[in-house]
Every structure is written in C-alpha cells, then in structure tokens.
Amino acid sequence: MKEEIHEKLIALTEEELKIINGDTTVNMSIYSDDEKFIIDSNKLLPKGELIDIRKHTRFIDFPKHKHNYIEFNYVYQGNFTQIIDGKKITLEKGELIFLNQYITHEIVKSGEEDIIINFIVRPEFFDYIISLLDKENIISKFLLTTLYTDYNEGEYLYFKVSQRKDIQILLEKIIMEIYEPSIMSKATIKLLVGLLLVELIKNSQDIEIYSVDNYEKMMIIQTLKYIDEFYNKATLVELSEKLKQPDYKLSKLIKKHTGMTFKELLQERKLSRAVELIKSTNYSVIEIIELVGYENPTYFYKIFKNKFGITPREYKLDLQ
Image (cartoon, rainbow, N blue to C red):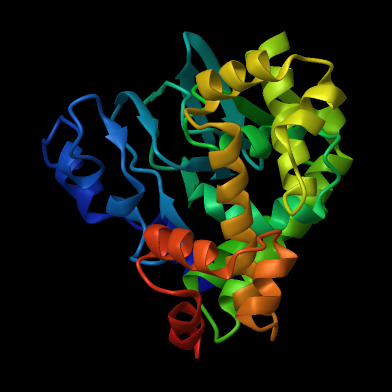
C-alpha cells in the first residue's frame, strides 16, 4: 500500500477523536435517520456513486443494525470482531466478509491497531458484473438474491483468504483507486471488483456461508437466474414449466420473497439492461427497445420515464 494512503488509514478521524475525548455513544445521525438504526447509503456515499469505502470507527461498540446496501468488511490490519445473529465472528488481517442488506449485526470495539475498511456498495453496482459470472456458484447466488431488496433473509459470506496474495493485491488496488481516483476510475473499479469476485469464486473452499438455505429460497434463486439470463423473452409460463411448479404457486412465492410480481421483476431487469446498453453502446433507442424485449416503444418510453424521471434519449444526452 502507498505510504500516504497507509497514513490516511491509520490516522484518527474526527469521530474517533471525539470518542477518545469522552463521547461514549455512537453518533447515529452520521449513519441513519431511522429509529431502527438501518444505516443509509445516502448518508455515506457521494451522490450518484455506487461504491465507496469508509474506515470503520474504532474505540466504541456499535449496536445492532442493518444496512440498505451491501457491505464488505476487509481487515487491513489487526482484527475485527462482530456478532451476527448471536454468533461471534473474529476476522483476522487479510480476511473479508460480505453482508447483505438484511443481516443484523453488532460490532465489538476495535483497538487503535485494528484498521477495517468498509466497502459500501449499492446493489445496482452488480447489475453488469453478475451478467459476466457463472451463475452456479456461491457468490453469484448471494448477489442474485441481494439484488432484489425485498428479499429479506440475512446472509453473509466469510472469506478466509489472508494467505492469498493475489486477492490481497486486488483489494489494495481497489482501495487505492477509490482514494486516488483517475479519469477511468469507475470503469477500473468495476473491472477490479469483477476480478476480485472471480478470484474469490476460484477459492470457494475458503468461504464460510451463513444463509437461510431452504426450498423456497432455491426457487427464488432459480427465478432470478432465469430472469437475468432470458429477460428479453422470459415468461412466467415457461419458468413454471422449468421449475415444475404451478404458475399461481410460483407467483405467490415470488411476491412473498421479493415484494414484486414476476412482471415487475422482469421489467426491472429489462430497464437495468436498457440503461447498460445506453451507457456502453452506440445502439439507437429503438434498437435497445427491441434488444431488451419490448415491441411497443410508446410503452417502453412510459415505464422508463416513470422509473428514471427522464426519457431514454434525455438519459443518453445527460451522459455526453
């Protein structure tokens, strides 16, 4: 790690100085306006950004809380103890844990030598990355369920990879790119995170998993995989045949676990894919409408504007 970045990581923050000087309670307003202490990404991420890092505040216990984003905790040095659903876990230097939005955890007070980097990631950051990964692996399944924020089962993936130098190098590169952004930082970070996920998948023997691994969850995972792969022609009838489930039963299951209907899930995926194509290709809006599986441009314009507040053409112009 570059010396100047290392110095920033070990330096005392304003919040830590207040704690050392006698402030013995967590300043909730920094993290959340919610009475239930759901930490808000809007409080921690710069406007419009999908990923950022924040050094964990030392010298104080953090009470039970959740997040409305995906969090990675990386132990840069020292160790890091948290209690997840009543289970105490201590991460050592070089280890990493992924937490979805619905995990409840509390954090044991860290000492001065314990430097933990919290990666704050909005779920939509993974919209593109997930399409590049093999769907039949632990990380893809974790991301597929957590991309849909109404799937409310707590899950974590604990990576015991302190001895994997290639993974440590990738994590340090991501931290440096965020601390010292360049013109191509957004693309670089996405590439580096994608490479990190690939390396973690290759070392699945080093992963400890906590999840509600039941039949209904597997049905939802299969549904999300199907929509992700076949969004431009997907139908509930075809899915029910693939899963050998009556469509009415599958509909209830999808609504129960995601808070959305099959049609709404499909529309969300089509719109996210349309945005990817607008950002990364020179296709015309009409071509994009066809590629994502809509036949009626008027209807597509309507739902696009309802979601983003502007038309596809205005969205494209804003990028220029």
